[in-house]
Structure formats: C-alpha cells, structure tokens
Image (cartoon, rainbow, N blue to C red; front, top):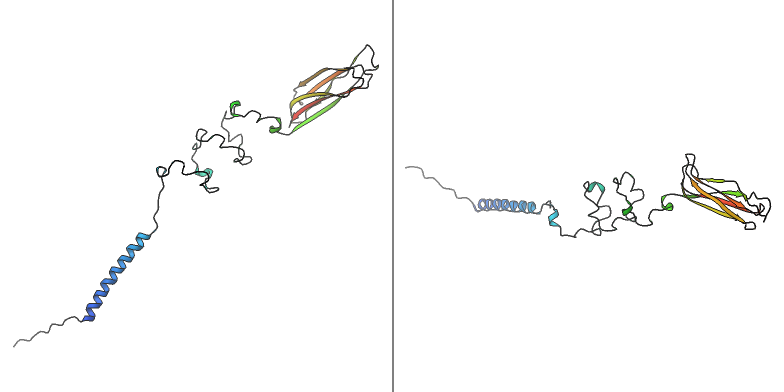
Length: 211
C-alpha cells in the first residue's frame, strides 16, 4: 500500500500574524502620505495676484524695502505721488550732487522761497567805518570823505551791500557812492560820503557775505 500524506493547516495564530503585518503596512503608508501632505510648500506671489492698492506704506514693516530691493530706474517721478518725497522722509545728506541727474534741479522744480542765502550757508556781515573829513560845520563848503572798503572773508561770496550813518552829526551829510565789486582777492563793497558837519559825523559801509 502506498503512504498517505498528511496536510497541515495553518494555525489561527499564523493567520492573525499575517493579517496584522498587512494592516501595519497599510497604516505606515497612510502615515507617510499624511506627512507628505502636511509638508510645507513654497507659495509664489506674483504681481498679478496682488490687488491694486493692496500694498501700502502702512502695510510694509519699517526697513522692509531697501535700495537693493529696487530695480534701477524702477522709481521715477511719474510714479511718485505729489509731495511724496519731502524733507521728513529723506535722511540728512542723502541727496548729494552725485545723486541728482543732470539738469534735474531747474527753476520750475524749486518752490518759491525755498532757496535763499540762509538756506545755502552761514551769512556774515563785514562793516568798515567811514570818517567825516569836514573841518568847519555848516559852512557853504562840503567835504567828501575817503572811499572805504568792506571785504568778504576768504572763501565767502558777496550777497548784498549796505551803508548807514552811525553818527549823523548836524545831519548835513550825504552818501556819494556805495558799490559792490568782485575781485580775485575777495568780493566786497566800497563807499564814501560828503559832510558839512565839521567832523562830527561817521558812516559805515557793509558787505553781506555767504560762507
């Protein structure tokens, strides 16, 4: 007689172990896909995604926009609102001759009264006395004094001229000449007056200069 073979059936423990392994694999795959879905993504915001007027000065943090962030010639006078650039938003010394385009500053671009002597530099006054050379007061003969000169300091430019009678004497005095002059040695003012005050008067010629 031939031998009879005995078929061995898998035990319940083996079956449950296999099912548990399959379920664990499925759980692992679901977990991995969930992590991948939660991973941070890079979102690009393009110019077309921003509504007009959405980005304002108040919406930007202080110092958020630097000079390096702005393309060359990106900001032009046409794109700037009226009076958007004023002395409150400009840092001291930021506007220099090199920062200005050629012919950028014209008479039409300068507000009335914005450029004057006091805005350009320190002003100084140089005064020189003019003596009364008359000998006899109140006689028919008047005497002309010497011409005196008030000169601006080194590196100064003449802004204006002036004269005054610091001692009028008997008030018989009259200015003869007050004239500005420009010279390589220095700008200034020359002046003289005539008197019939018998030497009792005194004048003064003045030069208003800009450092």
